[in-house]
Image (tube, rainbow, N blue to C red; front, side, top):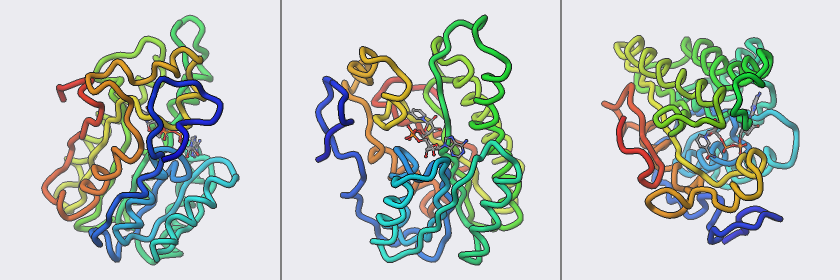
Length: 274
Ligand code: NAD
């Protein structure tokens, strides 16, 4: 097991950060997946799990650094191809280009996984600027619209889109007003698009993580919140990216063939309604 996060005092027990013990069985063999946010946290866990299931992977991410290279190395260790796709997904042209590059490399696109997202602590509406509001919306939901739109001409019977919402729109989150609003928009988008493309055999679903220990958490919250992160949920611990990987695989694979417009909640028992 690896340290939870270097330099962060936490009451949490260290747990493995990567789903390295995830056992694939070829459920996504011959498919191509594009995963935004694939260099970090939840997206990286999904990329590795999909690679273990045999899929070639396009790895979307924002900043050039070692993390994306590392994900590519993890993916290619599984004997499939990894393609690095840097770029800001809040930009429409970038989204179109990421889709086209994936298809140019692999000849197809079967699975689009939207994980990229940002959040900032903003709990006083009078202090939130229009610019901040739009930045969060353009990164967290406009991107999903653009990528889904440009992916659609390549997706076919059996293809899947999986979006990443959050537990927050299901319970409210006073310190993350703009973020939580974007995640609520993802719920409406997912359900509507699912119904719109169902007759083509394309499925659209979402995962709603509760508190998951990733680099986003110490980057967002103060030391006290980080120390207590996830301890309030009934299971008494935050989730790890590895706790989510299997659900993203289910929603992408033929085992999920009759699941569309749905949300899998993964939150240690924090919220229990849909
Ligand atoms: P993370 O910070 O580890 O990863 C975020 C990823 O998004 C990074 O790969 C980054 O490159 C990418 N990204 C951010 N802005 C981008 C942009 N403009 N263009 C392209 N890529 C961009 O965070 P994480 O915790 O793994 O979060 C992943 C997703 O899960 C986010 O959508 C987040 O809202 C959601 N989520 C996380 C939690 C949690 O507790 N960690 C809970 C609920 C939902």
